[in-house]
Image (cartoon, rainbow, N blue to C red; front, side, top):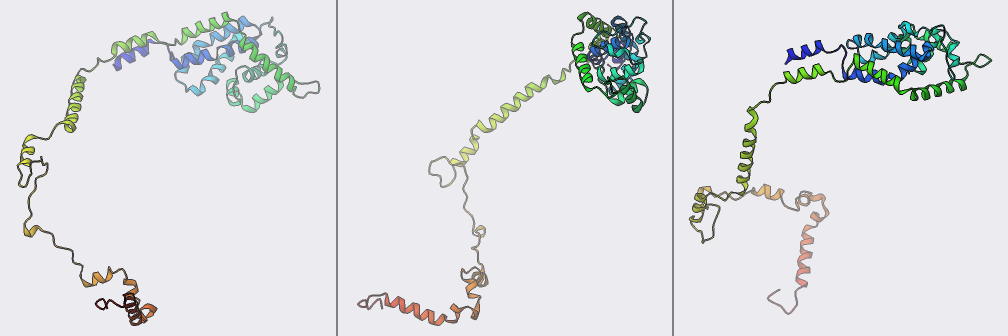
Length: 314
């Protein structure tokens, strides 16, 4: 199986992974518009963008995905076809892009069209972040006083978004075909090799279903099956049985097996007395100091409660 996978990898196109195919298709519109505005010619820009695909696909497999954007745009900027030809034009609303030089224009397009951050845009240009910021400042629109024209900047952003959505379908289809050549979405060789190298389904697991059925039957029998007949016969024939089926065998205990009654002793009886705290109070308790009087008084009250004619009761 490993040998089949290695052969499929060797025969398949370099970098032909679903992630790479999705990346290239996702940046198609931006790549075409970027190349068009950098070169000043749609046809020249499309040819340069598609020419950069094989070189990027050859190196993308050995790079982390986080470095793909900067590497792709750096490879695109290295294409000679992006250099403006003598007849290059920038129609409205992008006519202002003809004023900056190629480096400043690329810094602006990496921010507006490619959508890169500062670090990735600077890495794509091969300069530091401060140098990229200076190039972006030179290419940005300015008012007559030399300050940044924020209104013109917002209008340029809006025009870029609308132009990206309105790219001609034939240009997008040509980009799709170029991407399919360098990074097919589903490598057919790898799929066929993996299917041939796939191991057969194990047959030793077929006994699991019968075993599972036996377990279910045994569990049901545990709760639903009646008591064993020998045990029931012994219970019914036990001494003292009145005829009703008994499920417990009875046996009288011998004298030595009779448990002794609990004897806590005098001290434990005193401790368990409900008035132990009162009795333990000693002479400090007023009730105990007059205990003799209280007893006499209670007895007199009890005698007074008996009718005078009942001599026997007295």
